[in-house]
Image (cartoon, rainbow over all chains, first blue to last red; front, side, top):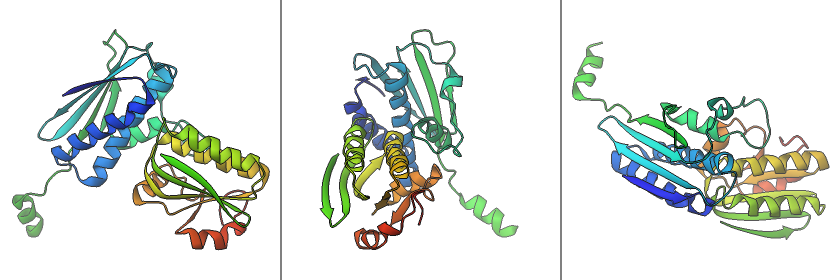
Length: 145
Length: 119
């Protein structure tokens, strides 16, 4: 599925609602659903603040794909190209406002990277794997050990 | 999100409810910093109604903490739900803020909070 919103912070709750619904549907445990929702919200917040410089005129597109073992989130915008260096997480030892959004994204997502070949703006690809289910085979193996 | 300010003796309490995100955190910031700048000696945020907080909300709380240090006043949070507490823990800020279980506990101890935030 793909959802497109204007770069208005008022619309972030719509994005959160969609991510939450799809993550629950995919089978993520509730605590993971909270973190996933936050990670996507932080990525979109970064687009609004740093990409569009708080202008409400831009567009943000979120594509969500569910696979048996993972979910992929692709966030696209048409803001000026962001240098990956500029959105690196900051050290937590520094107690100051700001700079935590990227840290939260990297803390929760299994992978997170910009598509360097996307020319129309920025494309951030984020992947989260579902927790591995313990099968009866695994249980019998662990009992033998 | 809604923020309402009330006073109990020398303590200003900001009752905050709903989602604190990029859209709503400026309102919390304005009320929190406004209360501190007006000379309130003790400021508490009631987080029991906060259903979600993102990095912009956390940044607002850190700004409040920094201003309380500057002014050598007391600042704390109470009633955090599990998700808000987890966010503070992940950012390693749970030991930086003075956190209280509930309003009664916060009112009893707020004046013991050191300017650096801890108890």
